[in-house]
Amino acid sequence: MKDTKKMKATNRRAGRKIGGTVAIFVFLLVLGVFMVLPIWLMIVNSVKPVNEMFIFPPKWYTLNPTFDNFKDTYRVLGQMWVPFSRYVFNSIFVTAAVTVLQCIFASMAAFCLAKVKFPGNKFINAVIVLALLYNSNVIYLMQYMVMAELNMINRMSALILPSVASAMGLFLMRQSMTSVPDAMIEAAKVDGANLFTICWRIVIPNQKPALMTMAIFAFQGAWNITGGSVVYDESLKTLPTVIQQAASAGISRQGVTMAAAVILFVPPVLFFMLAQSQVMETMAHSGIKD
Picture 1 (cartoon, one colour):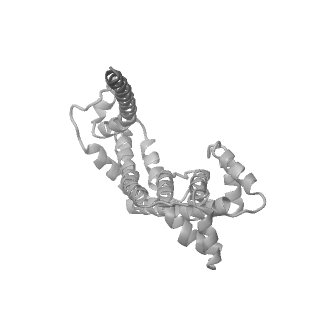
Picture 2 (cartoon, rainbow, N blue to C red):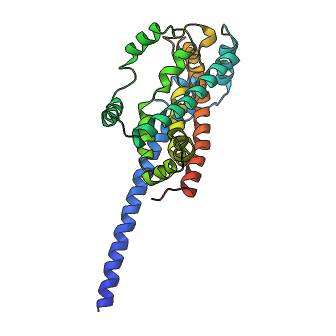
Picture 3 (cartoon, rainbow, N blue to C red):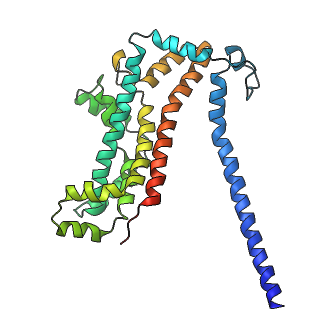
């Protein structure tokens, strides 16, 4: 009799567990659909002819798919004042510089805030958390004034240096480095290692998941940098800036806009896929135990 009651109780618990799993799966499925829909619409609109884009209500598919929008995008961008390859080079250079510099400076600053005791440490950490609440547009005017005083306007540095400092990246790395055991750092100090050696040879090699996560966010933000208000020279403009200029010609360029959006969407996705595989591999084969 007792065995029968235990079996019923076990079955009820198993049923509740399965029900909860199904509910979570359904919720994540609905959430995933809402996240995929904008991407699907962007891809569909990029292969729609112009006459189908203004059909109301809008359709989730195209009757006559065409790649003319991509051809028009290449043709429009090829008629700019400077070669199209120059815009591509500018975007790649700015993105690579911002991603690398942000990872370097955020990692060093995070190490100092997480593992070095100095006066004002807690205050600086509180300022970083407070900085997460502010949008970049709030401090844009102050940034412009500082860049004007430093003679950075209409230079490539106006696109790179303001994006190097990231409160999100610094907060992410600091939170990750707090998990490093203090005993490991003290042992390195006993062996004669200085703070620079401890940071780059002991702490940062064990922070690859957080470092790659920060690199993903840095790459995505840097790839979409426009800087149209601080860079006026055509030879210094990035690809998103030029595409915005081409798309502002009117409704006849809506196909070009969607095709350009797809083109700009591809590099961050590829970088995310490569970085994510490194994050998962590192998390599976590494760990720190005190």
